[in-house]
Length: 192
Image (cartoon, rainbow, N blue to C red):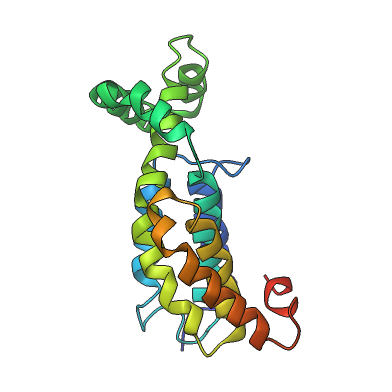
């Protein structure tokens, strides 16, 4: 007997609330968590009693990709944070080990390290997008319609990354074909 469905839903909800900020932006834990979630997509032990769990993981990857969509700002953020990695890691470690009140003071202490830490977190998400795209692509061919729809949403967001530029024509063709094979041209995108 598997875990009750509400435990899975609670765990999934916790995943979103602890690794994505309220406004849908990245925390330092977001990129490594997204890589782990992407690896789980192909694990046969993921949701054997709940086939919608991989769909939810693809929806999570879509949200991470939205947080990672830095466009031209990626180079500017990288220039601001690349030489500060040890300082930002130390600040993050101190923040994580602090109690709630001390943590709140750290974000408001005037050192302005919180902003570069969050920039570094967004950049880490930006940098893992090619790996996430590689993991999401096979799910476009899933037998489950909902999985294909969730994969399509994730792939569309992931394909905005500059590294996906050479793949975009083939991806567009594949997504257009998927939409044409759906009951109506709009059905595939409305289910997400």
